[in-house]
Image (cartoon, rainbow over all chains, first blue to last red; front, side, top):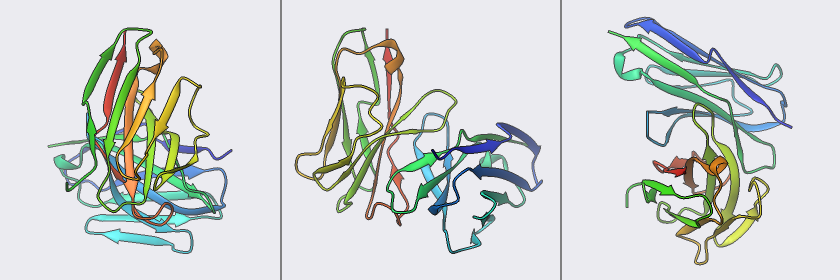
Length: 112
Length: 114
């Protein structure tokens, strides 16, 4: 059974610092990995989708890497801003599957 | 509409009551998912539709949970004889394809069973 773990569960940084969020998964037979952002009381917003054949994806200040063989992905957020405060979740979809398996999320607070 | 719409936004039910949660996906999206999110945790898969066909219901926790999407657009998640452990946020998501397109989530329905 696929298990997805995110460490740390919570993170607090001063504004301007770079954020590094970690995600690990136990079964490397994945089709893709997605990073989501969730604001309190809201649904999830897709940030980046990395295909299993890709090593990284970038969007603005966000960069996500994927090392499928070691079962790891890292989300980097450069020059953090208070508006980046949210919970960040990673999720994987297994090969030939259709449902996402989520990690527990990392709750980020960027202090002004 | 522009996004996935869920209603009601909040639902309080007494234990034993039946509830129905509605999801309006993005127009044209083939795939529709229901997830359950407990406080402080990541969402857990409940069920998946491709058009009107329910292809995977392996995540439904008991036979009290039932989902349908009769015309391949709007979906309803029904919970019969609600229990306190059913209290959670129920999220609906849709995508054009099931496995290779980003999922678009609604804001969820927060269900509280008293």
